[in-house]
Amino acid sequence: MVKNQNRYKLLRDFKKGKFCFLISVDNWSIELQKSEFQSLYLLLIKIHEQLLGIKNELMDEESITLELEQLPWYIELEGKKNEWSLRFVFESQDQTRSFEMYWPIPTAQNLFYEIKNMWESMN
Image (spheres, rainbow, N blue to C red):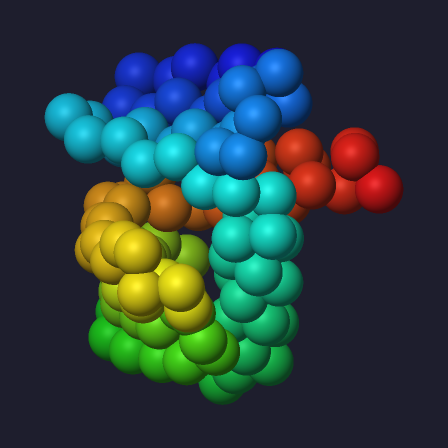
């Protein structure tokens, strides 16, 4: 499965073996294991639920920052109630790799929904 937009690409290819999910934004990409992708999905859902929980209390121009940490991920949502970016830090539990990624506005919202749809279509 490939979702290719102007600024991002999301790929699922189980034939690749261990690292079967690819997320690419602008000029970088990262491959994730299924368990890593699942934990990313769960964290995205959790931070999105937090946003929805306070969204009606926010003014349109009000800036917000939400942070969540659930190993191996740290995630930060920053922006306004209807437009936000996401920053991630990943620390491998195997201590084999670590990385950071950033999804700008509006890529963050679009990619969030694509990941949500991809994961839910598999389960």
